[in-house]
Length: 132
Length: 385
Image 1 (spheres, each protein chain N blue to C red):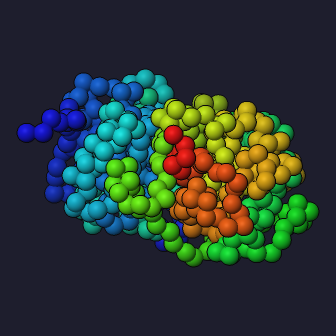
Image 2 (cartoon, chains in turn green, orange):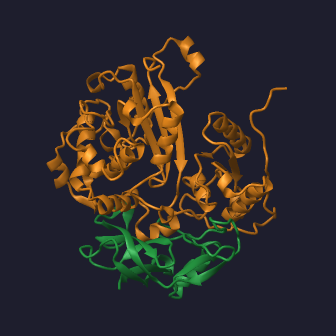
Image 3 (cartoon, chains in turn green, red):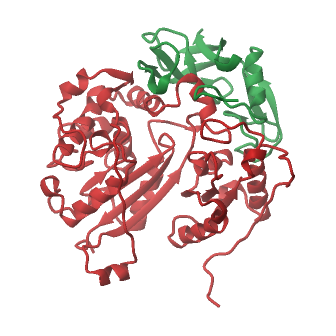
């Protein structure tokens, strides 16, 4: 049960994603109707509306599509500051929001990154990224 | 019997069970897709999406999110939050939107289900899985962070600078100083803006709106009734909306927004162009949003927003005064309602020291979902015929 703002709510629609993280795998839904990947998880495909899908282990590689360096503990952020928020464009063609484990001075749009897993709240593991 | 303007052409239902077979999001999608298919349509034929909010733990921006899940980019959305009255209210809203020319074919979707029986846990103030679960764990859920990601794209693509963002802050502050009902009254120069501390790169303190408490309200009536009321009625001459995405992951680009589609429709519905607009009250949670909106409305080319806001162009006395009341940035974040009340004041020529001389037509913007969903209004006083 989520008891603070930073713990994700896990439910049947999203459980495979978070279980994958616990096991060190970045998992993406892929529509078996048309092959389109999607993120964040959703019960149906936004391209063809099929509910049929599989969970695929993503390559874990991508590039920084945008970033923001958070310097204050906005809304009670419990971790250290500064920290880097990124939107990563994965090799599979979908984007994902995450944190970058790198100095804020080094991050730039286009930086090649790979996934890593960090301990998060409530015993969960979170997908983060680091420069390749 | 009255000749009907609208008809129901599709219906859908999910399975109904004592205990839920799936999450309310999943059940809702099944019903929505069944209705679309029953109508013999695909998702591309749907241009309006209206949702019934669950009574407890409503999902913010539920209709743009449903549209995103279904791959729909509607020109009208609405969330109806009336508990048991919502179902028929959705149909009434759909008819009104169709009759107003905002859309032609509307999905009215209810993903209710009695809350305690849902498979989802009870999260902080919300029921289902929305965008928060894939943002909040990374500290990206707060507005300054999610919008900063868009500002960064604009700087990357177009070389926009922090000083250019600052021109928006300075303009709003100057206007707030002329508005006794604005919370920020201290002068701000561009150097003050540049010296203010960085909150989330590239946003400095003065790039962010200020919290405030306050309310606003508007009365709308028919043109015929307005004539009878002997008031300085301000005409709603153009309306348009667009929903491109609800979550950042689904944005093709964050340096552009749904403002473009909304404004195109508003201008087309009014028979006006950006050149006809005398001032603009633009939703401004952060400075960069104003640049993107100005570009997307066509006041300047995409990417030229930085240059456009410089040199006083958006200040009173400039070519296109923006946020003459101080905006969210300096009047305070009241949700944007006072952008409308201020536009009306300007068009009534009752804006005192902050009056745009000879104002006849103004634009107002409202938006949500990190620029993914936008409503545009064009207002004009009676002098514009």
